[in-house]
Length: 164
Image 1 (tube, one colour):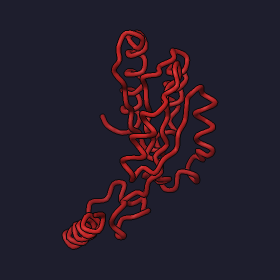
Image 2 (cartoon, rainbow, N blue to C red):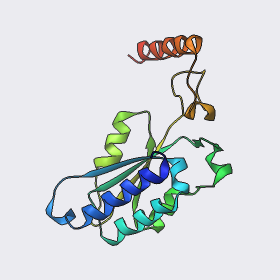
Image 3 (cartoon, one colour):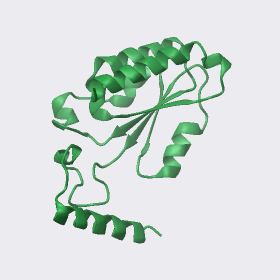
Image 4 (cartoon, rainbow, N blue to C red):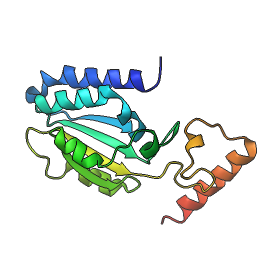
């Protein structure tokens, strides 16, 4: 089985399994999820559990590209104000540019509050780096044909070469 339900079950299990060991282990637990997955109730159930058990070694990174398989997240199931939702559930929340590794690392590591899980909302663009795919929901599941594949490779190579 795959899809959001199975992924959330694993995330929830990780949260619950971790709660009894959180105070005994210096290890951090990272959960990466797409913003479309936040329409699932199991995410918020796990969020409540994480706050209740003060899992300050838990960091949820949300890929906030505002698109999911069925369209714009705000049209399917509005999420704004997402940071306030996480705060209301007892989480520390930070927002960063998800395409900037230094910003992500800073958001995940600097000044972590005690006794609270951390949510990092990483603002991104779906298909980033190729105008053929950028901000287009169909690329959530679509496979490029040979011509598109070559164009995508060219776009990404140009982006890489210009990032110096």
